[in-house]
Image 1 (tube, helix red, strand yellow):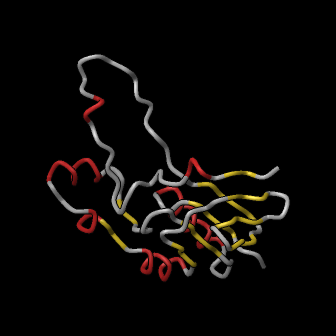
Image 2 (cartoon, helix red, strand yellow):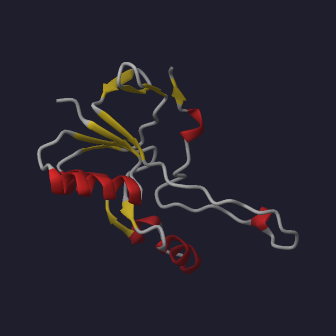
Length: 143
């Protein structure tokens, strides 16, 4: 059977994978991550950032540990370059992965409201393991 493919290994992606495993322990499951695939609590990011902790310090598990825990394949540092819904494939460069079902669990970006005097332009984004939004603007959906 073709796998359920989840693009994204944030809270949403890993939570979905856990729920799938509760219902079906044998289903083929592949998670694709543009970053290192570590599992961590996003709410801890701001606390970690301000206290000088490293991404490694707040990670609960790396991609290999998550793959074992979920009985799944986790592909870290993998950029999705195209999705073909008609052919049921996800392309990651030269490779095309067939899927039965596909879920985009890419997370969210904050809505930034322009307010003068807030120093928003001097702020920084932080994410454990890298920029979780990296690559999402390059995904093409073929019709």
